[in-house]
Length: 165
Image 1: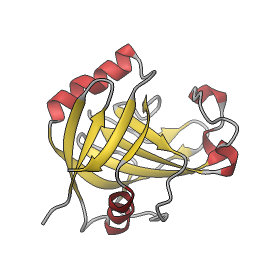
Image 2: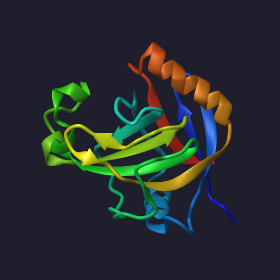
Image 3: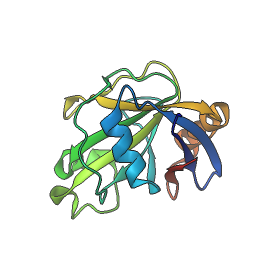
Image 4: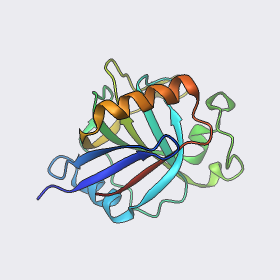
């Protein structure tokens, strides 16, 4: 039986449901599933294009390593990225919270992609492959509208929550 999660933009009160891709990314699916529920400040992608993501600095989940990776996520993809704390330390990223402890921590980025023509390249790091571990199967159109509002209206105060459905 497929495992399902809900992904919610909390301030905007919009949720979608994603199916975990257990066959394609079993380690990543298990790491996320076992850690749920998770809530993080939400951001809109600056480089990748049509992406909304949350950054988790205190996630105790094991590192899954690369599996089912992509640098060109498609609409409905749900991805995991891992960074060392200092990898996102450039002030150009605009992160306000936790700047002091980023250098000492792992940062896990859980992201949803809601449009076409995404390319995971970063000016500081180059290609940034992500593990595709889920696919949005319900509530997609509503989430697209909410993600566009994050882009145009701003992410300040918004959080992204991942929970078991």
